[in-house]
Structure formats: C-alpha cells, structure tokens
Amino acid sequence: MQAINDNELILFHYRDGLDVSRLAEIEATMSTSAALRERYQGLCALLSDVDTAPLEPTANFEQRLWARLDQRMTEDMAPPVRRHPSWLDQIRAFLGSVSPLRLAWAGGLAAVLLIALGAGFLAGRNSAPTRIAGAQSNPSTTASRMLDSYVAGHLRATEGLLLTAVNDDGGDLLKGNQELAENLVESNRLYAVAAARSGNSRLADFLRQLEPVLIEMANQSASVSVENREGLRDFLRDTDLLFQVRATESRISAESKRSL
Amino acid sequence: MNADDEHWIARARDGDAVAFRRLVEPHARPLYGLCARITRDAALAEDAVQEALFNAWRHLSSFDGRAVFKTWLHRIAVNAALEQLRRRGHREVTVDATEGEDGFLEAVAEDLPSPDRFAQGSEIQRRTESQLDRMSSIERTAFVMRHHEGHSLEEISATLSLNTNACKQAIFRAVRKLRGALEPLR
Image 1 (cartoon, rainbow over the protein chains, first blue to last red):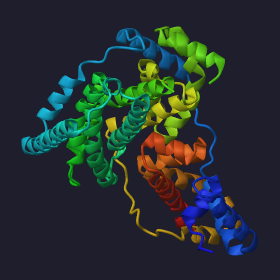
Image 2: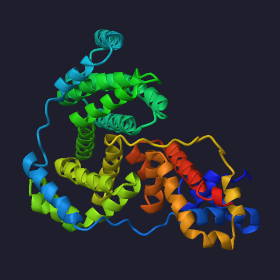
Image 3: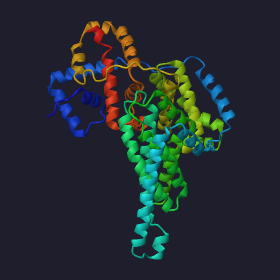
Image 4: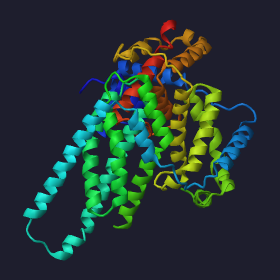
C-alpha cells in the first residue's frame, strides 16, 4: 500500500477529498499501525487547540450594523435589480491604463483571429451543400442548448479566474491563472462569434466586452506589480464585473433549463 | 431553501428593506464569527459583515436559488472579509511554505501524550493564535471554512476559486503552520 502522508491524514480527518478506497485503506492501517495512530492523535490534538468558542461581536453589534446598513440602503436607493453604470466605458478607461504595446499586440491577435474565423465561416458557407431552408433559419434546439451549456461553463471558469485574481495576494497563483486566461481568451472569442451567429446579440456583446479583461490577464507577467494587481481589483470592484459574469451565467443556465 | 426564506427573498427582491432584514438578521452573528476568524480583527470583521449584507442586498437578483441562501451569503461574506484585509493594506507574514513538505505530524505525535503539554494549555492557545496570524489569508480562509464552518473542499474551491488540489494544499499548509505552535514547547 502506498505510504500515508500528512496531507492524506488531514483529508482523512475531514473525510473529504479522498476516494472511498483510499479512506478504507487508511482506516484499515490505522487499526494495525500504532505509529499511524500516534500521528493521527497528534493531528487531532493540534486541531483541538484551535477549536475555540464561537467568536462574538462586541456589545450593540446589531444596532451598529443596521444603523449603517439602513442608511446605505436608503442612500443607494437600490432596488435589488438595479442598473449598473456602463462598464463598457469603464473597460475602455481601464484599457487606457494598459501598456499600448501590449494592447496593440493583443488587439492585433484578436483582429487576426476574428478575420480568420470570419473567413473560415464564409468559406464554409460558400462550399457547403445547399441545406433545407427551414434548417438554415432555425438553429436546432439541441445545438442551442449545447452552446448555452458550454457558455455557462465558460463563464463559471471566467468567474473563477477573476476571483483568483482578486484573492491572490502573494501572486502565487498567477501562473496558473495566466494559463487559464490564455485558454479562456480563445474560447471567449469562439462563443462570442457563435452567440452572434445564433442571434443572441446580448450575450455576444457581453462576451466581447469580457475579452479585453481576459487578454489583460493572459498577458500579466509573473513580476506584475502590486499596483497593477490593485488596479485590476479596483476595476473589478468598481464595475461589478464579477456579479455581471455570475448573473449572466445564472441567466443562461436558467434559460437552458427552461428550454429542456 | 425553506419557505420563509423564499417568501422574504421574493419581497426583498422587490425592494422591501424590512423583508431583507428579516431574511438576513439570523445570519449576522454567524457571519461575524466567520469574518472574525478570517480577518483576525473585530473591526474588520464588522465591516466585512456590513459589506457582505450590502452586497447581498444589491445583488439579490443574482441569487438563483440553486444554492442554499446561507451558503450564498457565506460565500459573499468570505470574499468581503478577504476584501477588507486587502483594503486595509493587511500585510501577511510569510513563512517558508516549502519547509518540511511532509512528515510534520510525526513530530507532533512525539509531543503526545505529555502532561506538561496540557499544563501549558494557555501558552499553546496563545501560540496557536499567533500561528493563525502567520497564515496567508487564503490558507486561513480555507482552513476556517473546512475546520470551523464544515464546508466541503468543493464548496471552498468554488468560493475561493481555487482548484481542488490548490484548496487541499492551502489547508495542508495551514495545518502545518499550526504545528509551529507546538515547536517552542517541544
């Protein structure tokens, strides 16, 4: 049997993150190995040291909380569904702060890819055999559902990317995020084109507006400065982009379910 | 989601602030506990709860009912707590994370059972607090969500937008840093 390392012992303690067979193996070894039992007891003792009572706020917490919250809710005058400021303009402003060279490179690549996609699409249309008129004008429900499903997955991944960028204080996760962003740039373009072709201009516009942010994240170097990271966080916070992504993903998922 | 929640959510979505308060009031103290464990600061925790509830109010329309409302709210609170740490320019004490990749539990086991160790309970507690301060915010958040809140790795991964392996690593590193609480006592 493969040796049981500390990480597995921690996961065993929480009964999470290990497959059933590995859990059973560790359990069996625990009953026969005194050394493993000792290590596990050590872990339990260590963890029990942080099991403190629930943390309680200071007196009048609720009063302070609601006094400020009521005021903000009133000032905001925000019904829960509210119109967000035009973040297309804010993306433009954000792009203004990006290095022109990098922007030119990214824009050039985007243009080349879109032209290539367009040319391929036209070539495909011209060479394709004549189809039944009805089939051309009405995209199949199945295809539409598949697109919705893929786009929803794409938006979930994008949300993950943005959250990691926001939460990654030390830059440890930057490399993985950068690779993910590179992949998402490509798929984002394809989905935008597919959405436009299927007549979903709202989704196509949204995806196109995401692209500059993805490109920026794909091109972040490992030595990205704290200021740049803060700038991206400020941008994401100010534009509510994360919530826009979540809302769009939820809407697409809901529409997809309704169409089933 | 229970019927009460559904009722208050529907009304709050229509802009009813009283309904919103009825909906989130029972969650305020648990949210404070969560945020306090992440931020390690009472004032930041209060601000995080404030921001979390305000964000929940503004974005209630994006709650689609797929998750339990409490889970949705906790997810917002975790991110609000992390945001507070960043806004206040919280600087983390970094500890070499590659030190002693594995096998540290063996050393912990050597400390047990020891009557002295239990006699030193308050000292260990103090050192444990200090080690919690030394974790990165992601490590501490992942640990708090797993150990104190009982969230699954999958939920933690979704909240922190880490893949599952990164999430496991964050928890592993957190526990390994906790081990430092015992070191001076060995």
